[in-house]
Amino acid sequence: MRCLALAEAWQDAGGGVFFVSVCDAPAIEERLKREGMPVFHIRQEAGTSGDADETARIAHDQGAYWIVVDGYQFGADYQKTIKDAGLSLLFIDDYGHADHYYADLVLNQNIYANMSFYKNYEPYTRFLLGTNYVLLRREFLKYSDWHRDIPKVARKILVTLGGSDPDNVTLKVIDAIKNIELEKLEVKVIIGGANPHFDLLHETVKDLSNFTLIINADSMPELMAWADVAISAGGSTCWELLFMALPSLVISIAENQDTVVSELDSRSIAKKINGNVLRKPEELARIVSDFLHDFDQRSAFSKRLVRSNNRNGSARIISAMHCPAEITFRTVELSDCNQIWLWINDPLIRSVSFDTRSIPLDRHKEWFSSAISDPDLIYYIVLDTNAKPFGQARFKIKSKEAIISVLIDPHYRGRSLGSLVIRGATEKFFAETQIDTVKAYIKPENEISRKAFSKAGYVEQGLCDYNGNLAHLLIKNRGT
Image (cartoon, rainbow, N blue to C red; front, top):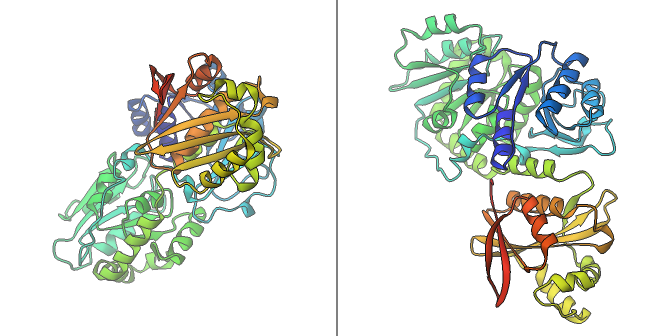
C-alpha cells in the first residue's frame, strides 16, 4: 500500500508506473490495474541475483529510470546489481536491515527513523527519514480538511491487523471484544486476501450481528472516518490512522513493529497493547472497554495526531527523486548577499531580466535585508555535490499563487541544469507550502529559459502583459 501511495504521487507528477512482483496476489493486482499500473511477474526467488537481473531487464525494456524496492529480502547485493545496471534506486527500509546501501535514496518513514540504523553506504546515497516522508494514498488526501468528532463513549471499533496476520491475532481481538457489554457497539474487522484464517474468522463472527468482516477493503479512509476507535497492528496503517486522527490501540504482531508501537505509546499518540495480554481475553476486553469509555484520553490522542500528521510526504519524496544527487537546496542566508549580487549583475542575467539596468550593491543589500525576512518570499540557494552554491530559486507568494525566478551561476551553464533546478525547486516549494499554482514570466527572446521551464513541467499559456512588459506565461500546478 505504501508503494501504491508513491506510485500515485508519481502518476500525479506526470510519470508512468508499473509493478514487478514474485508473488501472486490477484486482488492487489486488480487494484493496481484499475489505477493504470501494469504488473509484471518474475519467476525467481525474491531478493536473489536472478530477481535483480530480471527486474533490471524489465526496467530497461519498459524505459524506466527509477526502481523502487520494498521488502526485507532485498539486501546489499540486490541493490548493487540494480545500480550496476545503470538504474536509479529508491530503497524503502524500516530498520537498517542491509549490510550496505548502494541505493540513491533510502526511505524510512517511521517515527523512530534516524541515521544510527545506517552505518555503511555510498557517498551519493541520500536518506529520507521520519514522518515527514510518510506515504499516503490519494484516497486519504481527500480527507485533508476533515474534522473528527470524539464521542463521549466510543461505540464503533475498526480492527485492522495486517494483510496476512499469520498468528491470527485478529481472532484473539474478536474473542475479547465480543465479551464487552456496551449498547450499540459496532465492530468492523478488516482482513487481507492473503489471510489464511478466513474460514475460522467467518465462522466466529457469522452469528455476531454487530460484527462485520470485510475482505480487501478498498475504502480505508471511509472506514477510519466511520470508526471511533481502531485496534491496529504496528505497520504502515499507523500513519494512516495518525492522518485520520483516529484514537488507536496498537499491537506489535511482528518484530519489526516493536519500535513503532513503543514510540507511538511513549509519545502518547496511541496506546500500546502488550503481546502477553493477547493470551488473556478478559484483560484485553477490559483494556478495550476502558479505552472506549475514556473520553479524555481519546480526545488527547486525537489532538496530538492532528498536530503530528503530515500530508506532504509523497511530494517530498518525488522532489528528491526529481532532484539528482548533485543538486540540493537550502534556505537563503544573510551571508549569501554578496554572491547573489554578483549573480544578478551578470550581463546575461541582466539581458534577460525585465529591468536590464545593473543593480548597485547598496540598493541590493537594502532589498536583500527585507527579502530574507519576508514571509511571502520563499528563497532557496542551489548547491552542488560539494555544497557549493551555484544558483538561486525564489518564489514570491501573492494570494494563492506564486511567481518563480531562477538563475544559475555563469560557470555552471551549458550542463542542462536549468530544468533540474526549476523542477526540484518547484517540487520543494509545493512540499513545504500550501500554494497550488506557480507562474513563470519570461521575456519573449529568452528561448533557453522558456524551454527549461517547459521541460520542468510548466505549461505554456501564451503571451501576456507583465508589469507593462510583454512576456510568455508558463504555469505549474500542484500534482501536474
